Each structure stands twice: as structure tokens, then as C-alpha cells.
Amino acid sequence: KTTKGSARTFQPIPIMPEITKGVSFDTIAREWRCKWDTKETLAKVQEVLDGVKSELKKVEGLKGVSRTVCGGCLDFKVAVSVAAANFGDFEKAKFGPEEKFIEALKKIEGVSQVETQTFTIMPVEL
Picture 1 (cartoon, helix red, strand yellow):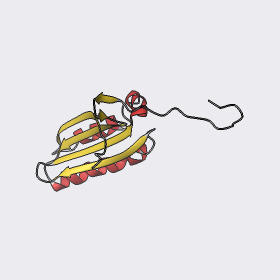
Picture 2: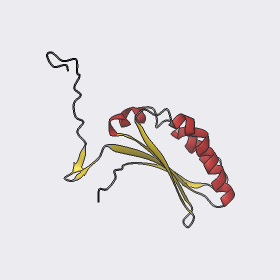
Picture 3: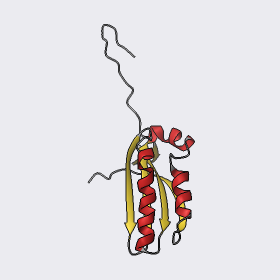
Picture 4: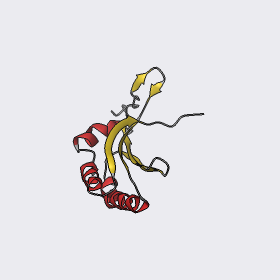
């Protein structure tokens, strides 16, 4: 909307969704995860992630991509974080390269428990 006598456009202030009192969010992440058995397997899993980076960069509303690896429990996790306002479109687009990533993981010998999950993520102010 433009106010009279002004060329300035005012945007509505986005309201963060709230799950319950004090638990609001503006970011939703889609996690892709698996278990790996050897360092050679882990290297192959990382190569699969490297292979979808260019597609991830194109995700509308992308806030970040993080990778978590645990050498003790042999977890490999990728969290693709998008603005909550863009999540519906991300979901309709089948989460970008998710299917390609997941199918490639399933073909690697030594990879197990290939799963996905959606969750909200927010920094905690201290």
C-alpha cells in the first residue's frame, strides 16, 4: 500500500507462527539422515551431498544448509532450513533435491536407516 503523498510502499510485518505460548518460529527445516558404517561409506555420502549443492542453492527462501556427523553413533544428517513463509512451496516441490539425495544414499553399500523429518528451528536468545 502507498500512503497519500508518498511513493513509499509499506509491507506488512510478518507474524511468526506460534506452536504454543513462547514457542514461535520463522524457520522450518527438512532433515535428511542416515547411518554409515565406515569412513569410506561416509566419504561416499558426503559426495552425494556435494552433488546436490547447486540445486539446494536454488531453493526459494533458503536460510541455510547444515551437516551434522557423529563419529560415535555413525549419524550423517543434513538440515535444509527455509523461511516458514516459503515452506509450503518447498514441500510442493518435493523438498528440492531430496528424492535424488535419498535414492543415491540407498544405493551406497554400508548406508542404513535412511530417513527424513520436518521440524522448526530457531536460535535461543540467552
